[in-house]
Amino acid sequence: MLSIYGQPQKLCSGLSRREMLTVGALGIGGLALPDLLRAEAKAGLGKSRKAVIMIYLCGAPPHQDMFDLKMDAPAEIRGEFQPIETSVPGIQICEHMPRLAKIMDKLVPIRTMVGSPNGNHDSFICYTGRSFDRQPPGGWPSLGSTLSKLQGSTTPGIPPFVGLSPRAGHPPYGSPGHPGFLGPAHTAFRPNGEGQADLTLGGITVDRLGDRKHLLSGFDRLRREVDSSGKLDGLDAFTQQALGILTTSKLAEALDVSKEDPKIRERYGKGFPQNYGDGAPRNQEHFLIARRLVEAGARCVTLNFGRWDFHSQNFSEFKNTHGPQFDQGMAALVQDLHERGLDQDVSVVAWGEFGRTPVINKDAGRDHWPQVGCALLAGGGMKMGQVIGTTDRLGGEPTSRPVHFGEVLATLYQRLGIDASKTTVRDLAGRPQYLVDGHQPMAELG
Image (cartoon, rainbow, N blue to C red; front, top):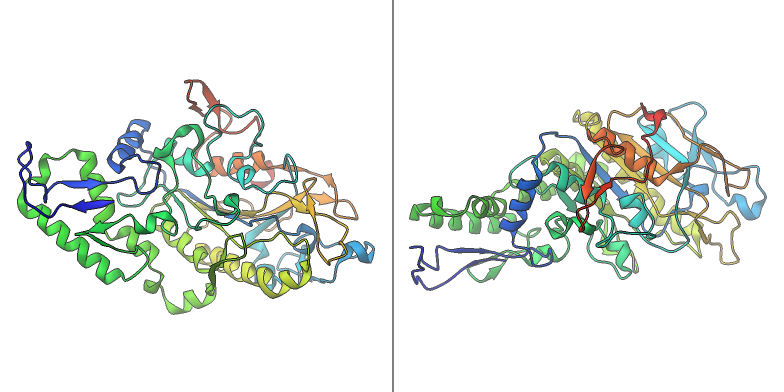
């Protein structure tokens, strides 16, 4: 928390207690923000302005009802949805995603995602490209944490790694990606989670996503009080930088969608900010906030969307809620990035931890299927307008070009200017660890 003590008692430094700022943990495991900034500086602050947005579709979406419809399969496998043509001849997707169909020239569906170690729900493989097995002490770090370590912030006042979703009933559904052995200095900043209540000005807690005018007026008073003393110059440079993060309007501006053109907000839609069961919100405004954050300078933004674990009512759940809402938010994000000239710099991936069973169960649902799943890529200067991979007539096994999660992570690192086959980060024992397990960037994406 950020505290201003009420009584002007002098400290040995000559500063009064009212002038001394205590910058607290910001929900990152007890590490003070100045210490976090010191750690990032020692790691070396990069200069690249490239970024990645990762959308975790909690619980694993039904691949054969989205991008790989099997119209020649038996009824118990085929399902009730029809395919529609897209803007790219030869590529068809589900009828309930018409917006994505119109911009297929800006997208790449992958129909053959493999590598999920089992049928257990967890976002870990999406964020790391690895399974839980054979982890070093502290665990493997996520993409966002690795970028924080390797490249640091691009813009003062904007954290390098931001996770938008709040905590969920099933913890992995609310995870933004963990720092692993890189430690709490590279944890995601979570404005929608515990970070909301971490600013206290004069004993009054301010919601970062609440009344921006009240928040900024409080910051302005704080800045005037500190600057007028003339003693701020003597404080540690990292404490000044920490103060800058908490008092600048940059982060507040990026999170404040009320500043956006109403027509752009309408394009994204609002969705539902409440968690869906034990999953994440179906909040389409998170797609917009993600764009605003990378535009402001964030390296990596993760957002978690919905709860796709449709063991029952797969088709009604998809067509009435998740499918159209994802279609609107994802299509708006991709179009927005292109219109703003960010499509060459910002990579986007949307995926879940595995696929769904070919056979529809007695409750009109599909169960867990780690053998094959799907992903959707956009931006990053990648070669768009193609589909990668084919599955058998039942949608149960890859028949050509299986794609491992690690290959996608290696590709994202490449688009960010990092060679994952050569770059290492040191674990808690000081051993260098490669960013992915020997996987290479996908040649199909250029």
